[in-house]
Image (tube, rainbow, N blue to C red):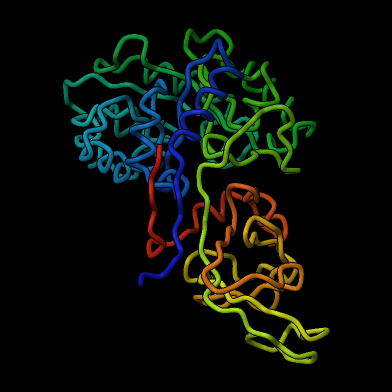
Length: 360
């Protein structure tokens, strides 16, 4: 019998979340972000569902080539652009759209002598202080790119990235929007600023393109985990089974370090999942787990292949019973909050040894 752990991927939920993004930004085109193996969900499978988006976004040439090898033919944007000048030939051959965020990348394009058409996104740093041209440098960079003989007509676009959109009321959001407006004033181009959080909370930032990422996978992009009235559907359900139920005595210490001690005689369940699968090792006692659809608390330390749960509220539970670590019935952001992290990290962190199964 195979180990019972798997990540079940609901492709209908993925399509539903894309439709929701379109509904929330009806005047914008959708650049669907599928970098990092579609946030752990399987990039090729996600790309086939998200072909209904206007374009797909990845982080690197390697990710884009994997999609092309899988016969994904639509528009693909490299969010970090080129890492080396020698990547340019392959990127152009594969009809990839390049984000230009540095002087070096700009110079590589100016030095290129190919004839194939280029589709480019020029990135301005409006306050993330990570990548992009300074606002005062943007117009000069724009003019240099616009002068490229290979530039495809109408395919020089503008973008920036928000630092605090997950906090809808954070004052930096307005500062960045105003900076973006001022920096791009007078440039005749399509613009993009809104990530998942701004797509849901800031229609004034939708512009021509929105860039949903985490919301496509059914996880709240907001720091408080709230998405009132939105209707996101979780795409990944990480599920396993109880592989043992042990009757323990008061005073018995559970797991490594004996960090948790049974307060009374009680049943303790052992679940086939651990940090070797991507479940957070630092998840504390009390982190919720679903056993037969009901919440029970994690107890003791998470080990590489197993974790333990308190079954006092489920004395009838037995080996073989169904367990959900996150997904349907237990939002990943709830588990992330207990573990002191974010849903992004948990989804992206599910390891390759966990089989993915796809439905819908």
